Image (tube, rainbow, N blue to C red):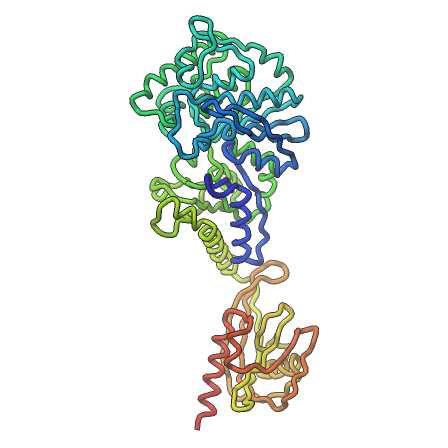
Length: 515
């Protein structure tokens, strides 16, 4: 599972869904593998999966304020920088973001700190930013010189982007000597144009439509300058548009390898080993929409499942209209945790009920499907032994080795009739000798055998009258045996269909005993 942004971390989502699935399908073996795609939660997922640790670093947020950000450390030689923690849109905390001055500087500060610590690899998660500055803030903090026409350092954000006249690497080659930089992204967008950073993502960061063309033109000029001064033009590079151009800056200034974030993390966390033995995968995130198949976790998981013939079920905190009519073939099915029309705040408030509810329903449906083709048919017989004591009817019950109450029953031995088997089982389990009064009820159910294969069992119950009174339970095969007043049976922990069988037997007993 990916994080459900603003609600569950990926670890929380996995834990909730797995626990609920185990309730609905208790025989299933459930493995959890929290995932991320380069956005929120990337550090948490990698650090937990790879037994790393977290360091706290002071960085500059998108609007120039100092804040504490996490940097993950793996094996002492790899650092993970999460752009969402340094210059993330979520840091606006509901306020209207100031996109023209929003800077990616905090990312560069965290990277420079990691390089100073002596790491040999820096992984930068590029998703979830509030910026559209082409990564100039990141590059400046890391050591690059980005100058205006008068030779001065350009300012922050889009305002600085418009001022760029020349660039050079500054002391980046020295500070980052021997350091491999990897940018991981959840989108494939190029830097400029209608599919670029500005037109695609800047509106959600607060840039109004009337400014899109001018800002894209400024980004285009900046890309050309990178090509001229650094011989690395990122304008048509896939993933260069991630993080408001941060991907392109990582490639131009550091020679970074830009890779699909979800796939990268799936490899690092061992997901591809787990899926080889899986019968089904459940994944999900906060919203499933048209962007999901452009690099988000659910699509990457779905693709891996399709390639291996493993069905992938997707749970969304919400589903966009587009996926309801045309969702990717990589998804076997889609489910929504929004169980009725409600506001976002209300949906978040009940999500700890709705997510497990949906996961449990998927499990129940999966269990029914898994049991639909039994490989073995078993027949058994049992007894519904009824007596009257002090004016009340009582039923002879056993408590099995799992602590659940049931009627005595067992398999039919070779050469036995069902009636003989029923009488024998009652006597062996409870010590009560009986006679059969009438045929009672039949029950058919399915379960998983010791080898994991589905089995169908057919049980015939006979209405019986006791010929003895003292119960002598066969401890070991069962935990206990006792007479239970008919009105108290519903209070016991019983198997789902037991009450229907008992009621049918009691009704027959009433009819037979009626004058």
